[in-house]
Image (cartoon, rainbow, N blue to C red; front, top):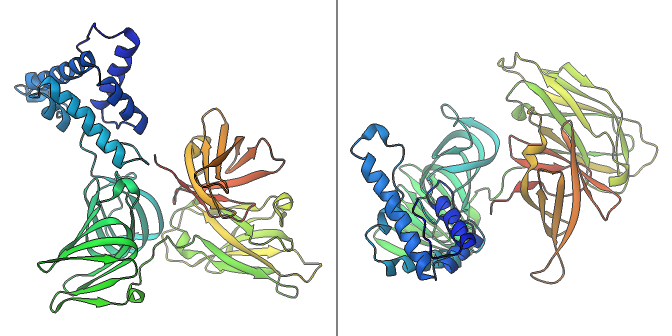
Length: 476
C-alpha cells in the first residue's frame, strides 16, 4: 500500500488501519467514521487516502486479465473513488459523516456493499418447507409453521409467522410472497422497504404487520409510527392504528387494526403452572413441540412470584406416557436467595424419528402452607453452552428498566441500567462463571448473584432465579 511521508507516524498508522478495514469485508463503527472524517480534513491525508484507493483498483485491473487470479471484486467505493479529483476525497468524508448522522445507534457499512443476508436470531417450533438454512445467515426462509426472528444488516427486525415465504432483497429490504410478518424498525433502518405481490411498503419509522394470501388479498396494519403504501397506481400514508385491506380484485379499502392478527413478538418458550395446597404433587407438561433433536435437554423451573416457596423432588421425561429418563435431585423455588438446584437434565434417546408425544412430569414436594405458588417451566435445547457463547452485549427489561449486560473474554462483565434521569445510566462491575449449562453473573456491589442459562436454539439468555424477560443479543 502507498505510504505518505507528510503525516506523522502515528496519524499515518491510524489512517492505514482505517483504510485496511474499508478494503476488508468489515464495517466502520460510529467512532471510526468520525475519526476518518477528522483525518481526511488534512490535505496530506486526503492524498494518501485517494492514492491508496487508486493502488487497490490498479491491483484489480492487473488481475482482471487473468481471471484465475481474481479472488474478489473491488468494492463500490473503490470503483467510485478512482476517477475522482483530490477534492472529491473530501466529499467521501462528508458522505461518511452524513451516514453517521443518520445511523447513531449502529455500525456503518461505509466502504462496501452490505451483504443481503439476514441473520436468524431465534425461532419457535419451526417446520421448514424443504431443507433448513445452513448457518445463521441466509437470504430466504420458507416455513410451513412456527416463528422466526430475523435481523437485516441495517438493523431492521422481522418476525415471520408460518406458513410463510420471506426473502431478503437488500441490506434494508425484503419481499414476502405469502404468510405473515411484523417489522420493527430501528433508527438506522428507517426507509426499510417490503415488497408484496401487488405493491410495496416503505417504512417511515415504525412497527407494522403484513399478511399475504397469494392471489387473494394483503392486509397491512401500522402498530406504531407510519408507512407509505405504493400500490394500485397510488401512494398513501398510514399512521399508528390504521389498517388497509388490498383485495387483488376490488382494490384497496380501509379496515380495522383489530383484524390484523399478526404476532409482534415471538411466542414464549415457557409453560405456566400454579400449585395450591391440596393439588396433586405431580404436574405434566406436553413439550412435544420443543423436542426436535436427540440429546440432553435442560428443564428449568422458575418462580413468578415471591409469595411462597415450593420444593421439587424429581423431573421425568416421558415418551407416549412412559418414562424414558429421570433426574431425581432435590431442588427448591422461592425468593432469589432461596432458589437452588432448579435445573434438571433429561436425555432424549437417539431413536427420535418415530412419531411420539413428549411430556415432562414434575414431582413437587408436599406443601406445609396454604399460599398459592406460580411459576413456569422452560425447555432448553440440548447443545451445552460454553463461556464464549455469552460474549458480547445483551439487552432486556428488568424491574421496569432497560439493562445492557456485557460479557468479556476475561470473565469480567458490566451491567448498565437506566436511571430515573432520562438519558443517564448506572453501570456496575461484575464477574461471571460457567458451570455446566449454568452461568453465574455476580455484581461486585451486591451479595446475591444472577443465575442464567443460554438457549442456543433461540439465542436468548433466561434468568433462572429472577422474574425478568430473557436477554437478547445486542448488535451495535
